[in-house]
Amino acid sequence: MDWYPLYNSLRIAAASTALVFLLGIALANLVAKTPRVIKGLLDVILTLPLVLPPTVVGYLLLLLLGPRRPIGLWVMDVFGIKLTMVWYAAIFATAVVSLPLMYRTARGAFESFDETLADAARTLGKSNTWVFWHVKMPCCMKGVVAGTVLAFARALGEYGATSMICGYTPNTTATVSTTVYQLWRTGDDAAAMQWVLINLAISAVVLLALNIFEKGSRRARVATPVQEA
Image 1 (spheres, rainbow, N blue to C red):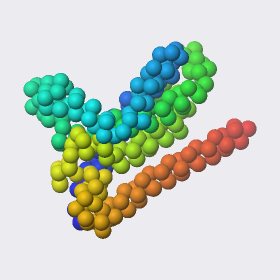
Image 2: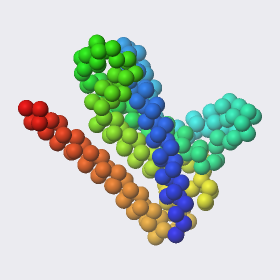
Image 3: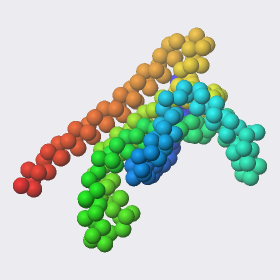
Image 4: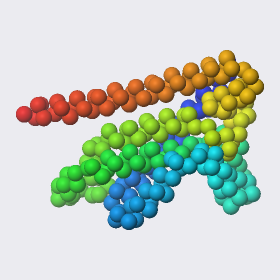
């Protein structure tokens, strides 16, 4: 059995999740502090990929990153690098479709944060950067972790945008999702089912890990007052 689709899917999902983690936290923190009207507009823009068909997202990415399109042409001329029909093109696709999950989950956590804790830290002379990473992030960690896990799971199973921007080439751009489609299209249902089961198993493990983390966080919050008392 050729394991390249699984390896490719995991590295794409890992890379896009790392990108979405940083971008999602930054955007969520920014939007959470903006006025209501601007917040509503930004929220619509950042959440839009969540409701758009993935093929539409892939098409829009092709309009931007294609070899004869503005960004794709500039990158090709300056760096000699293609941004479509290569394995790393799927990182762009999976990042766009999974960003809303990370952003919305982190934003909800940041909006529920008690700002008096941050104000107390500032009175001690701590910078905003220090307050964010040492006070706000630990308090909002549950939401941030949940968003990261959901983004990874979404990136791992993405098909529509990925197939549009990088296609399917065995041992080059093939992912688990595109391999399932190609095997089904060629009538190899047994092999397609193998990959379906592998994808289901990985997704189940990821979600199980998230549930265990959430239960552990709840136990820690319950135990803390008892310990302090």
